Length: 261
Image (cartoon, rainbow, N blue to C red):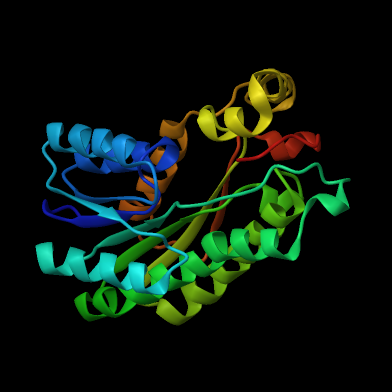
């Protein structure tokens, strides 16, 4: 996959890991779909930075929890470029609730979180799969979390959704091969507004310090760290599919109940 003009859809790419991934792909000669649900201003900033790096872009407001939106985003991509080489399922949501607070989550919370984190990934994958199959190749990378491996994270509903995403990755890799590879990255703590907004400034700084003390690499990830792993799985991992890759600085080795993305 070394020719120019390749096309990637990156969901949830207005900010954070999604924006970093879109920029990194643009820098490497990819054309990119910038997707957002509500953060239009930030999405336009990401689009502008990708264009400055030489990429052609498509800005698409769409909620991945809505199947019609997923199919429309794919249709618009095909209409513009006639190809989809990669899909990064990065869009995600959560509700910050202490795990011990079992009354803090409702069935509606679970359904909303699953609608984006699990069903949205499935719907986007289903929408792109025929085009990738017809082209004879494609790469899909799902952005999960060590929450789905270690049972830690912003809430039990989030943990459960990421565990489901990890196992769904295995099933999709089986049925979409040999043309399409499907892999997942599992970040731990990532610098940025996702955790800062959820934890508040004091909670964020405390969690960050705990990660830096106990993780094997003694640092927290930047969005670019995660984007680098995603881009490698797209471009460089030609013989890898169905893989769940932990990108957490070795936080899982400590056994400490650290917060995840």
